[in-house]
Image (cartoon, rainbow, N blue to C red; front, side):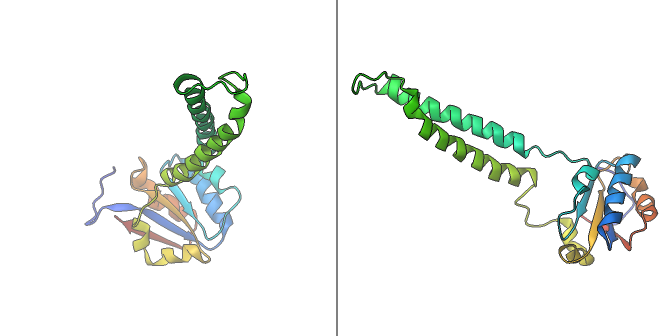
Length: 179
């Protein structure tokens, strides 16, 4: 974490914009300038901001892996019960009668994929987090109404240049975010 000459350590520097376009431009410029610990906040989804921040969505791959694991667990459980642990010959069918395994295997696939989606989303978003330093910034409540915010965190290696960089993006306001 970067060290600063402040009484209270900072979480970051926050810039406020009144429209989404300058926010997207600030995101692109920050990445081009080499900032890595950046975040954008808006009252609505903005097309292009995820790409401008350089974020990658890992959740679809996690859900796919969860679904594959669910299918394997569903098949494995049925194989273990029907073939290894409690084999019963009903009407001459083989112990490994995989067509009968399809529906329960499908259900465990959906169950594991859904649980992976929920818990993966919570983990990737850092939730639950009952308090965030941004909640202490009075103007940040406007992020849920009509304002757009861009944050450079103090953990960024180039944090010492953050205030000057944000001023060059022409925000309506710049505020320090105490920890």
